[in-house]
Image (cartoon, rainbow, N blue to C red; front, side, top):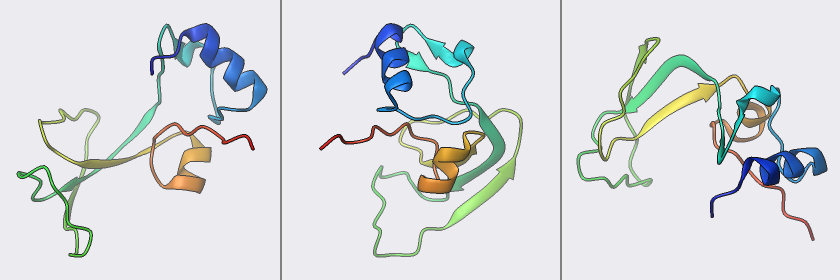
Amino acid sequence: MILSDKTLLKMLEAKSLIIEPLEKKQVQPASVDIRLGNTFSIVEDSSTGIINLENEIKYKTITSDTYILLPNQFVRVLSFAQTFIRRYKAFFIYQINKK
């Protein structure tokens, strides 16, 4: 589902979507720009596009201001959005379930 900037702003205001810290200029027409850090952990063997969680996952960690994500590659990177780091250790947007 693609959400408009108006819908995203309403969700942020209603706290059904939480991104902290967030500057209003990060909200784009159909997305929210997430500011990433400069430390990337790259899964060493993701050539098959499948990661078996039963085996130890080996990462190569690099520090760089830019990174080009290759097809079928898995990369872990921290964001400046503290809510994501504290709750999820990732940079994905999450939506709160209302029950």
